Length: 182
Image (cartoon, rainbow, N blue to C red; front, side, top):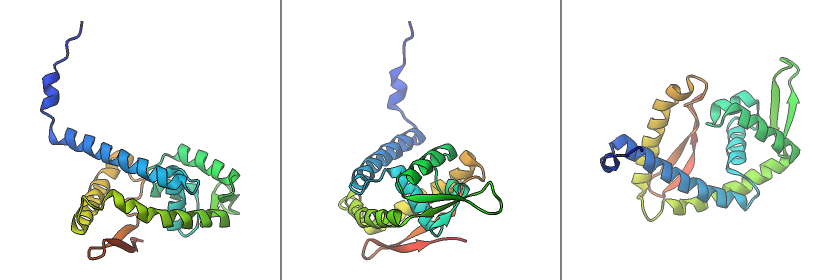
């Protein structure tokens, strides 16, 4: 019979604690986002893909979406097929190279994304009351740094760490836009 030493769990190292804390916070935020997006008929994955397509100018290809998101290529392909069936995107082959697929938002998707963006400010309640505007900016900066540092170790150069970064107004607590490195 295996006897487990439970005492080691009382003395977690900071890495263990941060991992658990980030996972729990991420899960809570994901659940809240899921609840809000459901109101406009979107899943979180569809919203992430639609947001990436919008960030890329409304017309793109699957490889660019893969580089811009943390989602896996096979998952993106499956979601894109379902999104096309639901009338959110069109998928057409480029003339050259013929094996490249062009992804474009439909008017239906543009409407849904606009509705989703109207809901997203409601997610501020997740932070308000527990963080000051300066703390929100610090949190954004720290999480961006962690992401940028770890992305190459996990995905190599297959993911874009230069995603559009939100511009946060510390006085009002709101986002005033996005800054992209091109």
